[in-house]
Image (cartoon, rainbow, N blue to C red):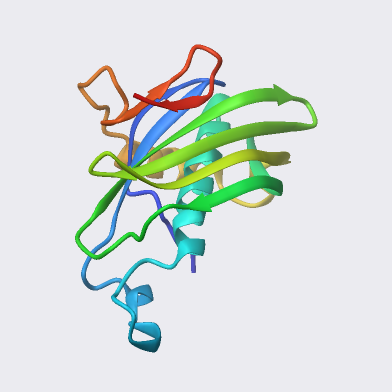
Length: 168
């Protein structure tokens, strides 16, 4: 079984940046109220959403020849909860790419409010065909890619000239 935590890709630029969405339905299995807390997507699944979006950037930038395996995350911060009915707008920037890896940073916002940020994610390149059928991934991409008509990836987020993410 495969778990997908990116519902839509709204824009991408090879070896530079990608934006996408993760919607949280009221029926998500992971929203159980633990210890009486309000329902929310667990923080690790929110981080997984951001990492999967970064992996899409690697896949697209290498024409589905490489994918990333996370080997380091310098910093991941959770600034709020992702509740049922919310949509997180995510942006990931590729800061560096070399033969031995990709360095990424990203963030996610709900209604312009920062809820997750990550810096210094290092992903080692892996050959896609060793793990997935590249043609299946191309089909999946064709289903989830819906370009945004807005020039800015999402409210409150802009990709800086340096390749990093900054708040507007």
